[in-house]
Image (cartoon, rainbow, N blue to C red; front, side, top):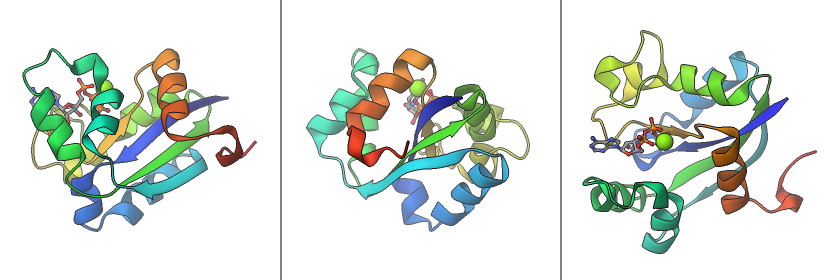
Length: 138
Ligand code: ATP
Ligand code: MG
């Protein structure tokens, strides 16, 4: 069993597709073991995306991530990290496979509806960034 962090980004929340995203997680046997809605401030978003701080899109990305509420979840399942990234699709929705969340709903390389951890190390950092041990279902 593996755990990964999922975020429904501000564009996904604003467009009313929280339910659609969660349905796709559940039909793919990714179990939600923690969940909350919150609105990030700049410091929280910059800390979360610190690995990208030298990238040209960093300021735009952190502005976008603070532009409205997000839904943050911890997903559990077999190969959850890879499996969830497959369900999300490629970062650039134009390159995403048919039937993925980003292919179906993203409108922009930045406004791509969902986030998912990309490795076990990243998942551990990202889960503890948003949830304490009392908020994680064991
Ligand atoms: P995420 O980390 O959100 O799950 P990802 O791992 O597919 O997405 P990253 O390379 O980690 O992609 O980029 C983080 C986020 O930064 C992307 O999801 C997207 O919102 C934004 N982003 C990435 N590349 C670009 C770009 N070239 N221009 C604008 N925004 C970008
Ligand atoms: Mg990433």
